[in-house]
Length: 216
Image 1 (tube, rainbow, N blue to C red):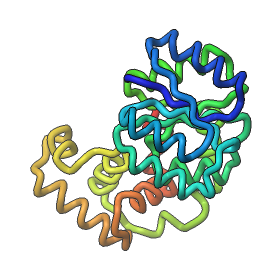
Image 2: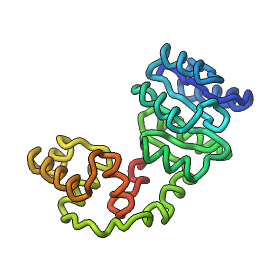
Image 3: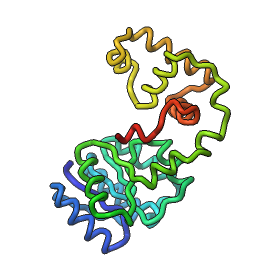
């Protein structure tokens, strides 16, 4: 990882994070206090680690933040704030489960674990965010048990929710590509969905997939 972009307006936070990043071998630290400065940093460092305090930044909406991130495909993002609401975290992490989370009131040890994991391309989510995603009302919003998926389809859906491709699932489960692809089509047809994002949301509601598995 070549650089870390600190998208945070707190001087003390930036100084502390700069020191922690250098401890794990990131020497280039770029500070961005506005979205335009962040986008400029992303142009110079397209594979940077972005550490963002959304609550202190000038994004107009969650969607705008996600749009900026999706345009910088090689970057790794860590949300780092004093307070992140339940609705915000659920929306953001279900929209993009590659986003990492640690809180400013977490211990230095946990923050360092998060930074080290991310620097090794290992996703990280803190206990606070994990508990929110496990909240019962996330799986009680709809009657997910009403759809009759076969045992094989549930296994394939779980793997899809883990972010695996049809080819990867076929290889790992010792199945043909055609068999896995047929299961995938049947799952999408039965659930009346059109994309993986909707499949992941169903898998969580139905208890087929626990999003915390993604961060193990």
